[in-house]
Amino acid sequence: MCAKPIAEPKLPQKRTQSAQQNDKQAVEISVELQALMQLVEQWLAELSVRQMSEHTIEAYYAGLFQLASFLERGKLNWTRCDKRQLAKYIGQRLEVDALAISSVQRELSAIRHYYSWLIDQGHARINPTTGYQLKRAPRPLPSIADGDLIAQLLEQPMPDTPEQARLWIRDKAMFELLYSSGLRVGELVGLNVSDLRIDAAGERGEVRVTGKGNKTRLVPVGKQALKAISTYLPHRYLWEEQGDTALFISEKLGTRLSTRAVQQRLKVAANRAGIAQNMYPHLLRHCFASHMLSGSGDLRAVQEMLGHSDISTTQIYTHVDFAKLTQVYDKAHPRASHNKT
Image (cartoon, rainbow, N blue to C red):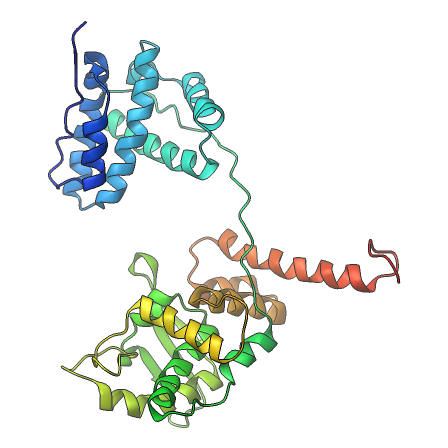
Protein backbone atom coordinates (compact mmCIF):
# COMPACT_ATOMS: atom_id res chain seq x y z
CA MET A 1 0.00 0.00 0.00
CA CYS A 2 1.49 3.33 -1.04
CA ALA A 3 1.22 6.24 1.35
CA LYS A 4 1.39 9.94 0.59
CA PRO A 5 0.85 13.18 2.43
CA ILE A 6 -2.70 14.45 2.79
CA ALA A 7 -3.82 16.56 -0.15
CA GLU A 8 -4.75 20.18 0.38
CA PRO A 9 -8.58 20.50 0.42
CA LYS A 10 -9.81 21.76 -2.93
CA LEU A 11 -11.68 24.79 -1.58
CA PRO A 12 -12.23 27.97 -3.58
CA GLN A 13 -11.37 30.25 -0.65
CA LYS A 14 -7.91 30.64 0.80
CA ARG A 15 -7.55 28.60 3.97
CA THR A 16 -6.43 30.12 7.26
CA GLN A 17 -2.74 30.27 8.13
CA SER A 18 -3.19 28.04 11.18
CA ALA A 19 -4.95 25.40 9.06
CA GLN A 20 -2.13 25.48 6.51
CA GLN A 21 0.41 24.99 9.28
CA ASN A 22 -1.56 22.04 10.62
CA ASP A 23 -1.58 20.48 7.13
CA LYS A 24 2.20 20.77 6.90
CA GLN A 25 2.52 18.94 10.20
CA ALA A 26 0.04 16.21 9.20
CA VAL A 27 1.34 12.65 9.17
CA GLU A 28 1.31 10.59 6.00
CA ILE A 29 -2.03 8.93 5.40
CA SER A 30 -3.26 6.03 3.36
CA VAL A 31 -4.85 6.06 -0.05
CA GLU A 32 -8.09 4.83 1.56
CA LEU A 33 -8.22 7.81 3.89
CA GLN A 34 -7.51 10.18 1.03
CA ALA A 35 -10.42 8.64 -0.88
CA LEU A 36 -12.73 9.20 2.09
CA MET A 37 -11.65 12.83 2.38
CA GLN A 38 -12.17 13.55 -1.32
CA LEU A 39 -15.94 13.46 -0.80
CA VAL A 40 -15.61 15.69 2.25
CA GLU A 41 -13.64 18.21 0.20
CA GLN A 42 -16.31 18.21 -2.51
CA TRP A 43 -18.98 18.96 0.08
CA LEU A 44 -16.94 21.72 1.71
CA ALA A 45 -16.21 23.28 -1.68
CA GLU A 46 -19.99 23.57 -2.24
CA LEU A 47 -20.43 25.15 1.20
CA SER A 48 -17.66 27.64 0.40
CA VAL A 49 -19.42 28.67 -2.82
CA ARG A 50 -22.55 29.28 -0.69
CA GLN A 51 -20.53 31.79 1.38
CA MET A 52 -20.29 29.68 4.53
CA SER A 53 -17.64 31.12 6.86
CA GLU A 54 -14.09 29.89 6.53
CA HIS A 55 -13.97 29.16 10.26
CA THR A 56 -16.98 26.81 10.01
CA ILE A 57 -15.52 25.05 6.97
CA GLU A 58 -12.23 24.48 8.80
CA ALA A 59 -14.11 23.08 11.81
CA TYR A 60 -16.16 20.75 9.58
CA TYR A 61 -13.01 19.56 7.84
CA ALA A 62 -11.22 18.81 11.13
CA GLY A 63 -14.19 16.92 12.60
CA LEU A 64 -14.85 14.82 9.50
CA PHE A 65 -11.15 14.04 9.15
CA GLN A 66 -11.30 12.47 12.63
CA LEU A 67 -14.33 10.36 11.67
CA ALA A 68 -12.73 9.36 8.36
CA SER A 69 -9.59 8.26 10.23
CA PHE A 70 -11.73 6.19 12.60
CA LEU A 71 -13.52 4.51 9.69
CA GLU A 72 -10.25 3.87 7.82
CA ARG A 73 -8.74 2.11 10.87
CA GLY A 74 -11.78 -0.18 10.96
CA LYS A 75 -11.57 -0.76 7.19
CA LEU A 76 -14.96 0.92 6.79
CA ASN A 77 -16.28 3.62 4.45
CA TRP A 78 -19.03 6.23 4.63
CA THR A 79 -21.80 3.80 3.64
CA ARG A 80 -20.80 1.28 6.32
CA CYS A 81 -20.95 3.75 9.19
CA ASP A 82 -24.13 2.85 11.11
CA LYS A 83 -25.47 3.96 14.50
CA ARG A 84 -23.33 1.39 16.31
CA GLN A 85 -20.15 2.63 14.67
CA LEU A 86 -21.15 6.23 15.27
CA ALA A 87 -21.77 5.54 18.97
CA LYS A 88 -18.35 3.87 19.20
CA TYR A 89 -16.70 6.87 17.54
CA ILE A 90 -18.50 9.41 19.78
CA GLY A 91 -17.49 7.38 22.84
CA GLN A 92 -13.87 7.52 21.72
CA ARG A 93 -14.02 11.28 21.26
CA LEU A 94 -15.50 11.77 24.72
CA GLU A 95 -13.54 9.22 26.74
CA VAL A 96 -10.21 8.72 24.94
CA ASP A 97 -9.74 12.12 23.30
CA ALA A 98 -11.38 13.85 26.33
CA LEU A 99 -13.33 16.34 24.22
CA ALA A 100 -15.97 18.50 25.86
CA ILE A 101 -19.58 17.57 25.13
CA SER A 102 -20.07 20.91 23.36
CA SER A 103 -17.16 20.12 20.99
CA VAL A 104 -18.54 16.67 20.21
CA GLN A 105 -21.96 18.23 19.62
CA ARG A 106 -20.43 20.46 16.95
CA GLU A 107 -18.73 17.46 15.31
CA LEU A 108 -22.02 15.55 15.38
CA SER A 109 -23.74 18.48 13.69
CA ALA A 110 -21.11 18.45 10.91
CA ILE A 111 -21.55 14.69 10.46
CA ARG A 112 -25.34 15.08 10.28
CA HIS A 113 -25.15 17.74 7.56
CA TYR A 114 -22.48 15.85 5.65
CA TYR A 115 -24.55 12.65 5.52
CA SER A 116 -27.56 14.61 4.29
CA TRP A 117 -25.38 15.76 1.41
CA LEU A 118 -24.06 12.23 0.79
CA ILE A 119 -27.64 10.94 0.54
CA ASP A 120 -28.61 13.77 -1.83
CA GLN A 121 -25.61 12.94 -4.03
CA GLY A 122 -26.37 9.19 -4.03
CA HIS A 123 -23.21 8.28 -2.08
CA ALA A 124 -25.13 6.92 0.94
CA ARG A 125 -28.60 5.65 1.74
CA ILE A 126 -28.78 6.05 5.54
CA ASN A 127 -27.83 8.93 7.84
CA PRO A 128 -26.41 7.31 11.02
CA THR A 129 -27.09 10.47 13.03
CA THR A 130 -30.88 10.19 12.55
CA GLY A 131 -32.41 9.76 16.00
CA TYR A 132 -28.99 9.78 17.65
CA GLN A 133 -29.03 11.89 20.81
CA LEU A 134 -26.03 13.07 22.81
CA LYS A 135 -26.73 14.28 26.32
CA ARG A 136 -26.11 17.99 26.45
CA ALA A 137 -23.85 19.54 29.05
CA PRO A 138 -25.71 21.54 31.71
CA ARG A 139 -26.02 25.12 30.58
CA PRO A 140 -24.45 27.54 33.08
CA LEU A 141 -26.80 30.07 34.60
CA PRO A 142 -26.06 33.65 33.55
CA SER A 143 -24.73 35.99 36.21
CA ILE A 144 -27.26 38.58 37.33
CA ALA A 145 -26.86 41.93 39.07
CA ASP A 146 -29.65 43.08 41.38
CA GLY A 147 -31.68 46.23 40.84
CA ASP A 148 -29.65 48.24 43.38
CA LEU A 149 -26.41 47.56 41.51
CA ILE A 150 -27.99 48.61 38.21
CA ALA A 151 -29.21 51.81 39.87
CA GLN A 152 -25.69 52.40 41.23
CA LEU A 153 -24.39 52.23 37.66
CA LEU A 154 -27.07 54.29 35.93
CA GLU A 155 -27.69 56.91 38.62
CA GLN A 156 -24.06 57.78 39.35
CA PRO A 157 -23.17 61.51 39.49
CA MET A 158 -22.12 63.33 36.36
CA PRO A 159 -18.32 63.36 35.87
CA ASP A 160 -16.53 66.59 36.75
CA THR A 161 -14.73 67.32 33.46
CA PRO A 162 -16.80 68.59 30.49
CA GLU A 163 -15.33 65.97 28.13
CA GLN A 164 -16.17 63.05 30.42
CA ALA A 165 -19.58 64.58 31.15
CA ARG A 166 -20.42 64.63 27.43
CA LEU A 167 -19.34 61.02 27.05
CA TRP A 168 -21.38 59.97 30.07
CA ILE A 169 -24.51 61.54 28.54
CA ARG A 170 -24.05 59.23 25.55
CA ASP A 171 -22.95 56.23 27.61
CA LYS A 172 -25.88 56.51 30.01
CA ALA A 173 -28.28 56.53 27.03
CA MET A 174 -26.62 53.34 25.72
CA PHE A 175 -26.68 51.51 29.06
CA GLU A 176 -30.23 52.60 29.85
CA LEU A 177 -31.35 51.24 26.46
CA LEU A 178 -29.45 47.96 26.92
CA TYR A 179 -31.15 47.40 30.28
CA SER A 180 -34.52 48.88 29.29
CA SER A 181 -35.00 46.77 26.15
CA GLY A 182 -32.71 43.76 26.66
CA LEU A 183 -30.61 44.37 23.55
CA ARG A 184 -27.49 42.51 22.54
CA VAL A 185 -24.49 44.82 22.21
CA GLY A 186 -24.32 44.05 18.46
CA GLU A 187 -27.96 45.09 18.13
CA LEU A 188 -27.29 48.31 20.04
CA VAL A 189 -24.40 49.46 17.84
CA GLY A 190 -26.37 48.45 14.74
CA LEU A 191 -29.22 50.84 15.54
CA ASN A 192 -29.89 53.83 13.33
CA VAL A 193 -31.67 57.00 14.44
CA SER A 194 -34.62 55.98 12.25
CA ASP A 195 -35.02 52.76 14.29
CA LEU A 196 -36.11 54.76 17.34
CA ARG A 197 -39.71 55.93 17.63
CA ILE A 198 -40.76 58.33 20.38
CA ASP A 199 -44.25 59.82 20.77
CA ALA A 200 -44.80 63.58 20.78
CA ALA A 201 -44.98 63.73 24.57
CA GLY A 202 -41.75 61.77 24.94
CA GLU A 203 -43.51 59.36 27.29
CA ARG A 204 -43.68 56.25 25.11
CA GLY A 205 -41.25 54.77 22.64
CA GLU A 206 -40.10 51.66 20.88
CA VAL A 207 -37.05 50.57 18.98
CA ARG A 208 -36.82 48.42 15.86
CA VAL A 209 -34.06 45.88 16.41
CA THR A 210 -32.33 43.71 13.82
CA GLY A 211 -31.24 40.55 15.61
CA LYS A 212 -29.74 37.20 14.69
CA GLY A 213 -30.60 35.94 11.23
CA ASN A 214 -31.53 39.51 10.22
CA LYS A 215 -34.84 39.10 12.03
CA THR A 216 -36.42 42.38 13.13
CA ARG A 217 -38.52 42.94 16.23
CA LEU A 218 -40.09 45.92 17.96
CA VAL A 219 -39.21 46.35 21.64
CA PRO A 220 -40.63 48.90 24.09
CA VAL A 221 -38.25 51.52 25.49
CA GLY A 222 -38.64 52.52 29.14
CA LYS A 223 -39.22 56.08 30.33
CA GLN A 224 -35.76 56.46 31.88
CA ALA A 225 -34.10 55.25 28.68
CA LEU A 226 -36.21 57.66 26.60
CA LYS A 227 -35.18 60.53 28.86
CA ALA A 228 -31.49 59.62 28.59
CA ILE A 229 -31.68 59.25 24.79
CA SER A 230 -33.48 62.58 24.40
CA THR A 231 -30.68 64.25 26.42
CA TYR A 232 -28.04 62.58 24.25
CA LEU A 233 -29.50 63.26 20.76
CA PRO A 234 -28.52 66.99 20.55
CA HIS A 235 -24.90 65.98 21.24
CA ARG A 236 -25.12 63.24 18.64
CA TYR A 237 -26.17 65.66 15.91
CA LEU A 238 -23.20 67.90 16.77
CA TRP A 239 -20.73 64.98 16.59
CA GLU A 240 -22.11 63.36 13.43
CA GLU A 241 -19.76 63.23 10.43
CA GLN A 242 -20.38 62.26 6.80
CA GLY A 243 -24.12 61.85 7.31
CA ASP A 244 -23.67 58.75 9.50
CA THR A 245 -27.09 57.29 10.38
CA ALA A 246 -25.98 55.40 13.51
CA LEU A 247 -27.82 56.17 16.74
CA PHE A 248 -24.70 55.89 18.90
CA ILE A 249 -21.55 57.45 17.49
CA SER A 250 -18.02 58.34 18.54
CA GLU A 251 -17.49 61.93 19.67
CA LYS A 252 -14.03 62.05 18.04
CA LEU A 253 -14.80 60.23 14.79
CA GLY A 254 -18.47 61.11 14.35
CA THR A 255 -19.15 57.57 13.12
CA ARG A 256 -20.80 54.41 14.45
CA LEU A 257 -19.42 53.01 17.70
CA SER A 258 -17.96 49.49 17.77
CA THR A 259 -19.02 46.76 20.19
CA ARG A 260 -15.55 46.92 21.72
CA ALA A 261 -15.99 50.63 22.46
CA VAL A 262 -19.28 49.95 24.27
CA GLN A 263 -17.65 47.22 26.35
CA GLN A 264 -14.79 49.52 27.34
CA ARG A 265 -17.09 52.43 28.20
CA LEU A 266 -19.21 50.19 30.46
CA LYS A 267 -16.12 49.11 32.40
CA VAL A 268 -15.09 52.75 32.79
CA ALA A 269 -18.57 53.67 34.08
CA ALA A 270 -18.68 50.71 36.49
CA ASN A 271 -15.26 51.59 37.88
CA ARG A 272 -16.27 55.24 38.33
CA ALA A 273 -19.43 54.13 40.18
CA GLY A 274 -17.37 51.97 42.55
CA ILE A 275 -18.82 48.65 41.31
CA ALA A 276 -16.55 45.68 41.96
CA GLN A 277 -18.61 43.18 39.94
CA ASN A 278 -17.47 42.52 36.38
CA MET A 279 -19.79 44.56 34.18
CA TYR A 280 -20.26 43.79 30.48
CA PRO A 281 -23.07 44.67 28.03
CA HIS A 282 -24.64 41.20 27.95
CA LEU A 283 -25.01 41.32 31.74
CA LEU A 284 -27.50 44.17 31.30
CA ARG A 285 -29.48 41.95 28.88
CA HIS A 286 -29.44 39.13 31.45
CA CYS A 287 -30.66 41.54 34.13
CA PHE A 288 -33.45 42.79 31.87
CA ALA A 289 -34.69 39.24 31.26
CA SER A 290 -34.46 38.12 34.89
CA HIS A 291 -36.05 41.27 36.32
CA MET A 292 -38.84 41.22 33.71
CA LEU A 293 -39.66 37.59 34.51
CA SER A 294 -39.56 38.27 38.26
CA GLY A 295 -42.01 41.13 37.85
CA SER A 296 -44.35 39.70 35.23
CA GLY A 297 -43.93 35.94 34.98
CA ASP A 298 -44.80 36.25 31.28
CA LEU A 299 -42.26 33.97 29.62
CA ARG A 300 -43.66 34.43 26.10
CA ALA A 301 -43.52 38.20 26.26
CA VAL A 302 -39.91 38.14 27.48
CA GLN A 303 -39.04 35.66 24.72
CA GLU A 304 -40.49 38.06 22.15
CA MET A 305 -38.60 41.05 23.53
CA LEU A 306 -35.29 39.17 23.68
CA GLY A 307 -35.72 37.84 20.15
CA HIS A 308 -35.24 34.20 21.12
CA SER A 309 -36.43 31.79 18.43
CA ASP A 310 -36.70 28.94 20.98
CA ILE A 311 -38.46 29.48 24.29
CA SER A 312 -36.10 27.02 25.98
CA THR A 313 -33.40 29.70 25.68
CA THR A 314 -35.60 32.13 27.59
CA GLN A 315 -36.48 29.51 30.22
CA ILE A 316 -32.96 29.66 31.62
CA TYR A 317 -33.98 32.91 33.33
CA THR A 318 -36.73 31.11 35.21
CA HIS A 319 -33.96 28.96 36.74
CA VAL A 320 -32.07 32.09 37.72
CA ASP A 321 -35.15 33.44 39.46
CA PHE A 322 -35.77 30.09 41.16
CA ALA A 323 -32.17 30.04 42.41
CA LYS A 324 -32.80 33.40 44.08
CA LEU A 325 -36.05 32.07 45.52
CA THR A 326 -34.29 29.08 47.10
CA GLN A 327 -31.74 31.41 48.71
CA VAL A 328 -34.57 33.38 50.31
CA TYR A 329 -36.20 30.13 51.43
CA ASP A 330 -33.01 28.79 52.99
CA LYS A 331 -32.52 31.98 54.98
CA ALA A 332 -36.12 32.44 56.11
CA HIS A 333 -37.88 29.09 56.55
CA PRO A 334 -37.53 27.53 60.02
CA ARG A 335 -37.33 24.00 58.57
CA ALA A 336 -34.84 24.85 55.81
CA SER A 337 -31.26 23.60 55.71
CA HIS A 338 -29.69 26.67 57.33
CA ASN A 339 -28.43 26.62 60.93
CA LYS A 340 -29.88 29.02 63.44
CA THR A 341 -27.42 31.08 65.46
